[in-house]
Amino acid sequence: MDDARIAAALMELARARGSDKSFCPSEAARALSDDWRPLMDDVRRVAATLPLTATQKGRRVDPVTAAGPIRLSLR
Image 1: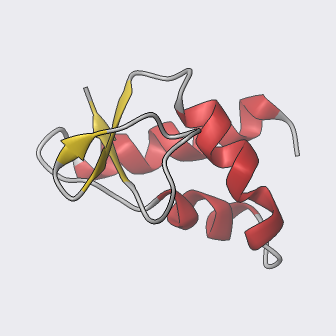
Image 2 (image 1 turned 180 degrees about the vertical axis):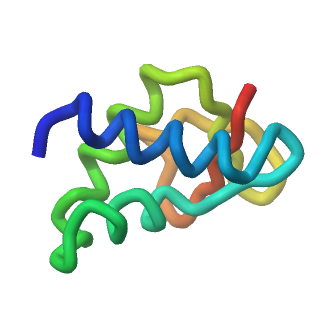
C-alpha cells in the first residue's frame, strides 16, 4: 500500500469528522483493506507526517512510538 493512498484515507476521515472529533487509525486501515491489521504500522507512520494530532488517554503522543490504542484528529 503506498503512502499517498494511506494519507488520503487518513485526511478524508479527519476532514469528515472535523477539528473537534477524533478517530481511530484503524478506521483508515479498514477503509483500505479487508486485511487491515498489517497496515497499522504504516498508517501510524504516515499519520505522523500529516497535520494530525495523535492522543492517548487525552495526552499528545507520537503515533509511531505510542503503545496501545490512539486517536487522531485535525490539528
